[in-house]
Each structure stands twice: as C-alpha cells, then as structure tokens.
Length: 353
Image (cartoon, rainbow, N blue to C red; front, side, top):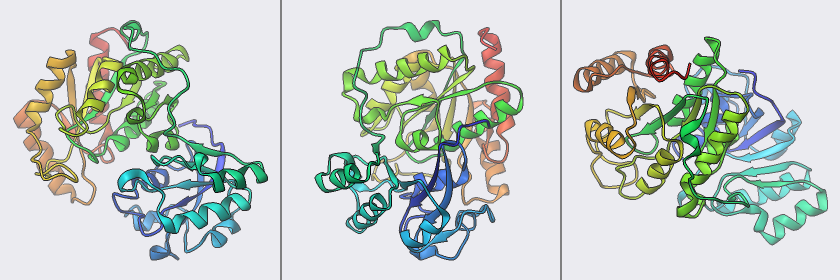
C-alpha cells in the first residue's frame, strides 16, 4: 500500500498471540510492513511456529520465538508491546524484557495506559542508551475544541463505526484502504486507538486518553491534517459503539469529530452480550438509527466479523443482515469490494470522489 517502513521490530505478546488480548500483535502480523517490519513475535506458548499459522493465515514469514535473546538474532530496531491488558498496565513478567530490550539499544513502543516513559528505571536506562520510549497513548501537547472546519474538507469522510468493542474495526479500516488503493484512490487513515497508530495510520491520537471536551477537536484536527496532505477519502477508525454504556462517550466524540459522509458499521452478528460486560448488545437497527439521529450519518454497509467462522456461516449472516436492514454486508477480509462499492457510491452522491 505504499506505507513507509520505518523500523524492524519484534512484538512482545507472551501468551497472547492469537487472542483478543493480543489484538495489537495480531494486527501488526496481519498487516505487516506498514509502519514496522515485524521480524519476530515473542510468545513462548507458540515458539517454533510461524505467526501466521497461529492466526490461521498460513505461513507469513514471521517466526514466533520464546525470548528476546532469540528475537535479537533477527536484528530488530524496536520492541513493540503487542497486548492490551486489563487496566492498561505493563504485565510484571514483561518488565524485565522491556528493560533488556532497552539495554540492547531497541526503541520501545507501547500503547498501554501506563506510560513507560514515565517509569524512572526504564527512562534512566533509555537515557543511558540514547534510545526512545514512545508511549502512543500520550495526548498531544496542544488541544482545542471542535470548530466545525471538518465540514468543509475536500476529502470524503468515512467512519468505520461499530456495534461493540472488538468487532473488526481495525481490520475493516485496513481492508477498505487496501481495496480503495487497488482501485486507484489515495485513501488516508486516521487512527483513534493505539493499534492502528502502530499499524501505520497517516495521523491520529488515542482518543480515550484525551480530556473529554477536546476529544472531538483532536479527531477533527487529524482529519484536517490528512485532508491537507491530499488523501481522499479519509477513513476514520471508530471505537466501541455510540450506544455502549461504558465507552459510548468516546464513540460519540469520534462521530462528532469527523462528521462522516459515509459509515461502514462493523458488527459481530453472533454476539449477544457486550464484550467484557454482562449487558446485551443492542440490535443493529438501533445503532443505525442512533448514528443517523446524532450526526445525520449515512450508514452505507455492514462489515461482518467473520474471524473463526466458516464461509457458510458468514454468508448466511450477511444475507440475514441485508434482509433485515437493507444494506450490503460482507466480511472485509473475504469481500472488501462489496463494502467499498457502497462507500464509493455514497461519496459520488455527495461529490467527494
């Protein structure tokens, strides 16, 4: 996709590769070569395998090793924390690995809530070795409220929203961008979470780390930045769901920040309870109505998370969704073209492509 590869990296995902906790590692392997060239993954529970095999992709040429010392044989320049832990803290068993990585001269990139650059011991080691610790969740220095300038972009604005957490929004964003580039477009990506920043977005900020009044403003500024660089359309990563009792405020901030002209709604049709909560998932029709009511956002397609499902199961679910809501539905990894067709049709109607 023409992404800049800036660092050879090893991903630390001990006991987590292939799990939901290891989603950062999973995405970096699945879409390798955008911001980092992943040369190895550390996970002793899968050591000796190819990372693609762990994810059900077949061999992708990324070995899984049991230790940092084994990973160093592949000459990495950076260590990436590849897990999203409960509470966002560095697991105790990871700390010594991070410290040794710094001592070997590796940069450390982390999307955890706990800022590793503020840890006195790790910061001192990094200073001694002259290497960076990059906490991608750290909010930008300058913040401003939403000003409405996003409504006047030259680019088409596309939001990948969701009906819950962990329903394939990152995959949908990356597959939409890949397919649009195949068709000759120059799509830009705005990340709102740590995984997509690490995977190679063109701009973005971890929105849930920003004070609430400024969340729509930082999303707006990121869209304006990518628009000014000539990308079109700009695809914005959503978070959770606007109807989520715990995270809806972040989802709403992203919606208002980008004021999308087209929305692709990521959805897991087999899920009955919200991920990590004993709360029922609202019907997809409610989510569509809410997006239209809150921002006059036009939902144009449904992206179905088919991970771990057979093609038959996915096809049946897509057919059911199309019948229920009257929108095209597809697994973005199997049929991104169906989703892109809907996006392009909408953007043509508003004069943006």
